[in-house]
View 1 (cartoon, rainbow, N blue to C red):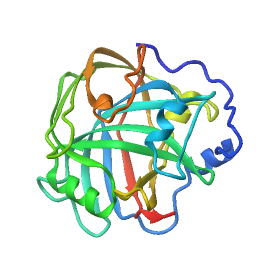
View 2: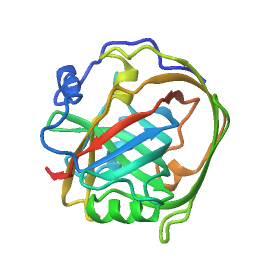
View 3: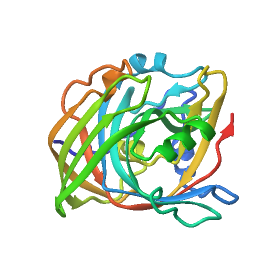
Length: 262
């Protein structure tokens, strides 16, 4: 599988975030975070998609964020751990679980962020809380992550959420050498340096923005040995053509702030 291409200059259309906007998102937000957690064993799988195919899937006001005129769809499996609030320690049995998200990149009023089509997870409490209090499309699923050796990962998932389309995911990948930090105008930066998320209510009449803070992803080269999935198709999204851009992400400690209506 190919690594990210050689960095090229961003060419944003009018109204899209500037490079200064993107760099500013790395600053830690003011105030106290609501949640703290760690993310690890992560795989970024990205496909370029014409923006006009994804824009109709977004709520009003949100605009697809593009790099050199192309939108991007991503499937991202990972492990979440040490989940706790700012006033409580990790709760045994509920502080570590697997997650698998389908996402694209968007912007609003010059603020770039992530839009999630789904976030499948193995923890029922996390799914309920995220859907109830954050308007995020979390879904119940069974998942497994195996590490036969330090460089190999095997991830399996099957959606089990009542009333939602079935979906499955299987991937095996190897983790390669560490990569240098991406240049701010590079595609790797555009795809992985994201510190804001958007969500809407079910009727898409209200839009919310949430901030996250963490150190830049420690990226590694990766090679996908096997991949099969119906995740994108379960949302009516286009089936990507060609091989994805892939990278593995090391562990990061993450802080999350409350969602705010925008």
